[in-house]
Amino acid sequence: MPDRGITHIDAVFGKIIANKRESLVPKLDQVQLAEKLGINQPALSRIERGESSVNITMLRKLANAFGTSAALLMNELEEAIKTVEEKNVSVLPKKEAEKKNDGLAMALGAAALIYLLTSK
Image (cartoon, rainbow, N blue to C red):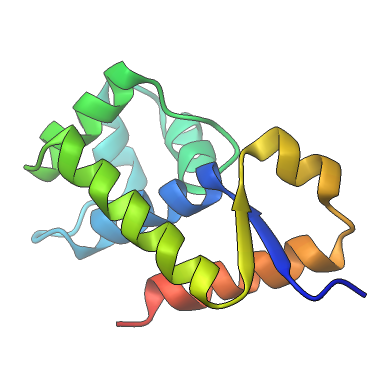
């Protein structure tokens, strides 16, 4: 049994995006944010679930939608990675995480990620 959970960077960033979307005032649903970004709701859903990576263009669109900068979003990502890693969860690039995935380790990582990034 592994001693560390595993998650990947896209999952961490996706959770940040979902949290920011839900904390906006007024709160935006996925359809509304997707429209602002110029993408469809399923594409945004894949980003929030960590199934799709975000390119530089989308990073800038997300920052604009949240009224922040791409640099500040990246700082949030770095802080979230530190928080997750402090709880004994490895944060790896997606392909590397998938190679090391033994099911349980990925589940532990996902559960820790969700808890850490949603509890304030």
